[in-house]
Image (cartoon, rainbow, N blue to C red):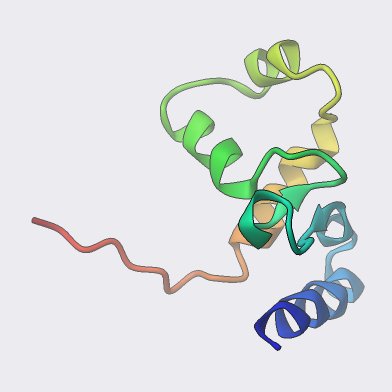
Length: 89
């Protein structure tokens, strides 16, 4: 049921932001984590690479099957959850 809700949320968001449709959640692929298109690269991985200092160009060089618009999709997907909090020590 949770999988269905997440899929519906992505589809509804695609109306507002067309890049969201590039993010896919598939049961059995990366434990159901949101991935970029039909790759096994998760939204979280892309965000972690960027947060650690990698540039979009560096990531595209390392993963040539990614496209520049995939970054827009990752940002659009992540923006759906602006209240995520990281607990400190």
